[in-house]
Length: 150
View: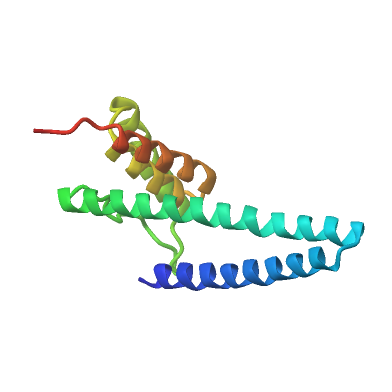
């Protein structure tokens, strides 16, 4: 729940910034000189890119959460079996061992979104965020393409 609140607050701050920057861009355009109109258009482009990025990221998070809920309903969420340091951080060797099992599981069942989901969690635990995101995107794509069961 804490992560959801943090995400919502961050998104709200970003939207406020986008509105503020967009209003400044409009003011620059209204000034009417070639230089201010050029800067105004440039200032308007940045919030548009930001809104697009925020939208795509929010879609990703919602889809990943939907997969987590579906996997939880099946009883297939990965169990936190990782060893921790005294400070509470995940032990690297423990994360690597779990990752290796998840990687083998995914290689054995490459079309199962559940395996890709668990692999994404293992990548995240091993502190490899870019690969975790790609694995989660693969899980989302496989889940979206799954045949409807009668």
